[in-house]
Amino acid sequence: MGQVVMNLFSRNPNNSNTEQPLETSKNNSANEEDIDKNITIENVKNETNPKYEDEHPKIENITIGVNFTIDILYLKPPSDEENSESLSKLSKLYYKERIKQEDTKARNDLENAIFETEKTITLGEIKHYFTEEEYNNMISVTQHTKEWFEIEGYSQNSTICKLRLSDIKSALSPGLTRIKDRQETERDTHNLLELINKTQQLVINTYERSELQQILNQTQGLQLLTMSYNTQKWLSDKLEEQKLLLPTDKPVLTSSQIRKKIKELDQSGESYYKTVQDTLNILANLMKTKTASNADLNKTKTNEISDNSTTEDNSKETAKNITQEDLKTEL
Image (cartoon, rainbow, N blue to C red; front, side, top):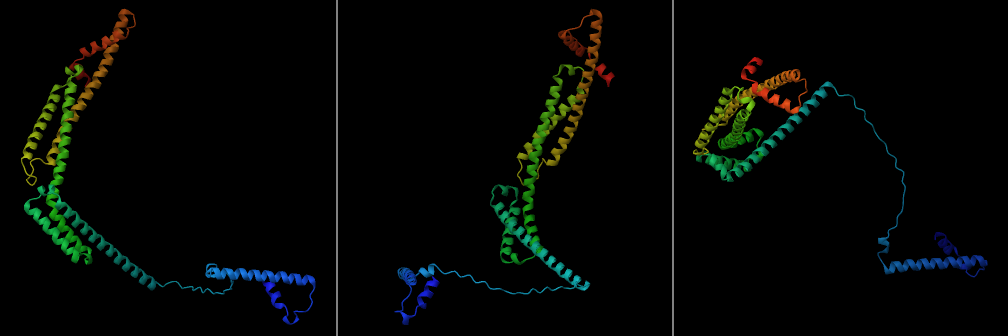
């Protein structure tokens, strides 16, 4: 394109009548047609779409060499005094940040306690675990603390916020303590009832076994059974008395009392169970010994091998012949 334009403007207007070679004239004529065509197309584009040049900006790449210099500064090691000063500044910054975090946490804890206490007050059931005086005091402390916090709380330090939080906890303590004690008592009552049932079932199942009826020490079993029934009656009476009391009254049945009964009954049950297991082990050893002796006697007399039914009969007979004297001998 550039060459065509140069050719166009290089023509001398004064020598327009000068004869040119045929080939050169043809080339110039063709170039002129291309130029006119291109100019015409560009003009049409610009006329029909004035924003054509804006929508299709020209891109021109320019490369510029840039020289730059880097200065490296080598510092000498800090002196002991400078190190000490730096450490002091860091310690102060750390302490200041730690205090800031503690203050923020204390304010958040206090704000959360106010919110949770207000929610607790709206619960109708929890009111039964507070006396009227305790309940009014809880409302008063919570309201006063909330008003103080909205005005001054966000600017107070952790020490002040913790004191306010302690006031709220103290106001809540009586009712929450009673609720906790009642939950523990109900759980321990359930555990004691389960232990009583297991103990009674252990003794009854033991005396239902025919091989133990004559040889087991019945006194220990009866004592354990009596103890379980007495514990059951004691628990039933205490529960009946407790039903007549208000949640704010001093309880007649406490978790510590129930746990004491559980410990006593559990120890007696474990001792009895160990006795039964030892007796069963001794009984099994005696049965094996007498069965072997009877088998040898029968083999000598009949010179025949006893079948399975005869062995089973001998085992049953052996169990009947085992007495408490045999057990005492083994023990």
